Image (cartoon, rainbow over all chains, first blue to last red; front, side, top):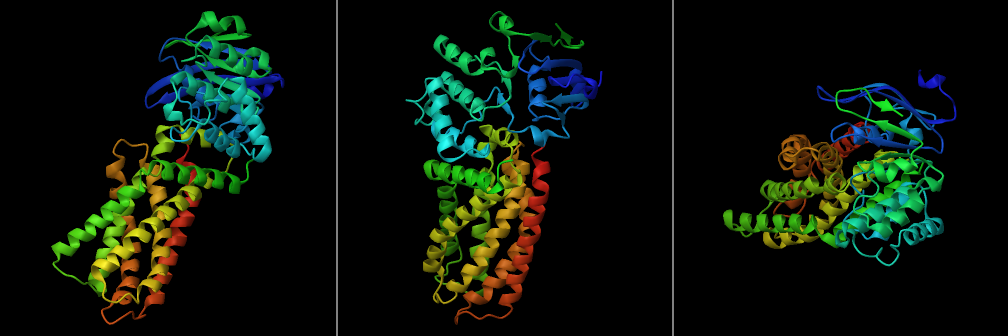
Length: 222
Length: 226
């Protein structure tokens, strides 16, 4: 069904999505929809296109074919309307290594149009929520991978996005970090979520829908 | 949408803070320029230069020193995910072009603040041309920044970045360098500065800045697409 005929409550509608890298399709005939506030867990082996799907939804990649509608915006045509409404947590933390955690978060807050006292309040709030307030003045290069992931989670939710796109959100986190992260980006946070993972045991209990991507086969939605 | 001024200030502030903290570009640029002056001084076996030779030595040195900074302009964005962060933000992406070009102008001005006095000590008998030279430096810096930012943003995704930047930038910089050396030559004449065709060369520099500034501003958004 074309996205324009779908339920207006759907946060994400994808139909016949294909993305090629050169001659090789990374995604082919992918289709699903996701209601606002629900969680979609995306599973699949390495090379199945999970990260590619997430980057397309985040407006970082253009689809080669198919229709994608996210939060009412048709991609890639209306990508500019969507930016600022998405929290994206990818493989890279998107943090500058030579700036401190606080400096990085202030930079991202300013890019998102948040400044002054409001930025400070939000930054301190997310730092406290991830247990990073005492390490946030260290340069990112001096932090462990787990600490960087906590900061990346702070960056991801700093601007209170409506949609979270999470690629292996628990990577490098210890048990305490996972629990703290869950409060910010877990299903209880009340946001629509797409979670890419290799850990179904951990994330399937949180899933409202599951998308299994395979290599050379059509995506299956459960 | 975040106002472009706020995005510009955030990106420029981040770049200058990072450079002050890491000194990844400026020391290399300055060391290159000073070493080149020393080589010219002993290679040419002259204790003073004037006119076209002085102008050529100054601009050849500044141009190649600038290439070092231009090469590194987008490295953090490429290696630390800055491009993705900026593409995810509700900002006019041209703010990135303007901020990066401004950062490059600051680097070039700092470079010249150190190296032009050294050039004067090494080679000039008459310092009267240095004041009007500031106008030439400012206009040439703007042109180099506009072209350099554009080329650097295109080359940064290539593994052959260090080769691509000079390969594409240097031919594009030829008109700028002709105008800059043409404007500088009469300022550094042995008997003191003369202003023959000085205004015309400044006009050419200004036109170059305008054209490449507008081209960069117009196409930069498309360069950031995947």
